[in-house]
Amino acid sequence: MKTGISLYPGLHGTAEEHLALLEKAADAGISRVFTSLHIPEADTAALRRELRALLQTARRRGLDVVADVSPQTAAILGADSLQPQQLRELGITTARLDYGFDVRKTALFSRIMSIQLNASTVQPEYLDALRDAGADFSRIDCLHNFYPRPHTGLSEAFFTAQTAWLQREGLSVGAFIPSQHGRRGPLFEGLPTLEDHRRLDVSLTARHLAALGVQSAFIGDGQPSDAELEALAAAGREEKGVVVLKARLCSREPWVRDFLSYTFTSRLDPSRDMIRTQESRSHASGSIVRDEACPRRGLRRGDVTIDTDMYLRYRGEMAIMTADAEEDDKTMIAAQILPEERFLLNYITPGRRFRLEFVR
Image (cartoon, rainbow, N blue to C red; front, top):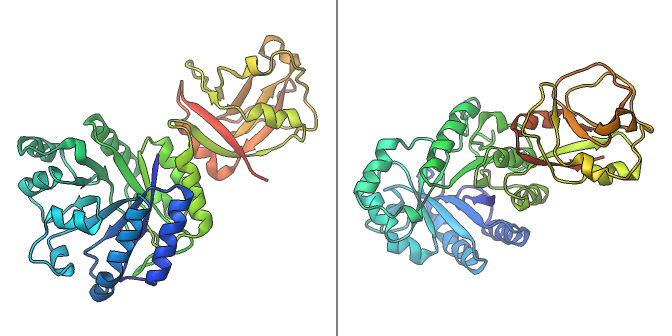
């Protein structure tokens, strides 16, 4: 999954802070930058002063700069009209075209530079019209809106349906997640695409987008912490299609951590009460699996279990409970998925790969 940050010259922060953030993001392996060239609250004079240096730095670091533009952007840039050649010369690699551009002009832009459509609002008839107008779809991708006001973010149901449709059309789709460290004004309530993400940390929201199959994740707010940058970059480095869940070990046995550090595949025949794995018994082959220093209690959703030798040919099978169950003296509770992470279990569908990341 590609990852990106957002910068808002003329709105908050100094030019030096913006340049430092660009460098940190590039050093972390983040490859995209989102900016907006038509925010009403922005100081236009400051934006003009800062923009060129930011774009030069982004170009030097090989970053894809996505600029949200409108017909008002021309005046902000001091031009009579907005032309794709002008944006390219500035160092903008992708123009996000939303309100104010008709089909003909959008198609024209796509034949000269990469463009981005609003994934939250685009409709099938618009894509049909773009094809009829000769748009170059090899230069088009999509990015969902962010939503500054609480309770206005998208529902997951709409988001997944809209994203899946666009991907079936052959388009890459991105979305925004909020910072919990440096939120953008004027509301300072975070800039997520999904309302469910507004109060969640960057690591969890980025991994959730990856589980949903999104191809790009941007932090929408403009002043993320260094820890948030690294969390975003780490999510972007994960293998495509793998669901990553954070867990806490219940056993101090070294072999348990090693055993649970594999990337597992969910079985194709899903069980009612647990996620079973295809490979775990073969990983345990030849070893003795005993229940040592692990909790003795009823099983709960989110428990990571390993069947002991008492389960005979099931010995060494690793599973994650998706429902509560009675205590089972033949299986050990080896770890627990963190409570706030357990919703990610819903995305471990039959045949999907997943791995655990352990925290203290």
